[in-house]
Length: 353
Image (cartoon, rainbow, N blue to C red; front, side, top):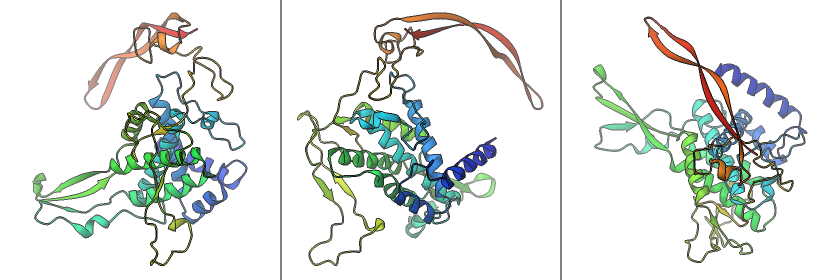
């Protein structure tokens, strides 16, 4: 099943890549893809990861991260990207994180031909420890670099929105890198763990999504109009020879935004920032292409954001009962079958008016 899905993805991506009108990539993005054979599949996988994770994280919210396909190269996230809201900040962060994560994993899996596993740790194996660096570490360095070149290049101009989008892109990549963890495997007779080898592994993308959702809830509203106070890293000094310009020589930028509330701390590299309040998402809003919450399912017993009171914006809700057929009374039979009965259960469904 997994192989069939991979083949379907490969076929659809090939069709898109061969038809520039259907592939919403800039000239520089397409050039980067061409120079890195295998990257198009990883980028497509990352795009799917981003949309799936966004919809999972917001499945119980009024704004549930809907996606659209117009066939003309517009973003699948729709007109919400024209806003400077916290939802926009999350979309930028999760998309950038997904590309970084997918490319890093493609390197270690051998499906991207211009990178390999990250072997830098082997050069600094710990002394006096009962383990050593070995195995194939996910190449987060290459993934982060590729994500900057591929995702950030879309941003045009030098206005406040440009600075905000670049900051949120970097925030997504920061949490992929910070989530890297050490994994180890024991070697020896009967699992005695005489020797233990370790490598660095990416976090699951669900873990990245959970962290970015927390950052969404605590996002900082910043003052529109400040210049972001861009801080350049690696800026050549007066006596240093300037490097040739090119995508690989770009210097990273960090932005010191001023929060709208002076009592709040300035956002760090991993924080999400926005400058415009979110719509209430209650009713149809053509400005962002959102159809409201009419017809959405809600939880009649919850007082949280998924509850009918909040989800339906005070309009009330419809309730109905239905019969659901489910597997039940499952037993394991040696060897090796699981047999279940089919039970009918009465359930309730609540939808917003």
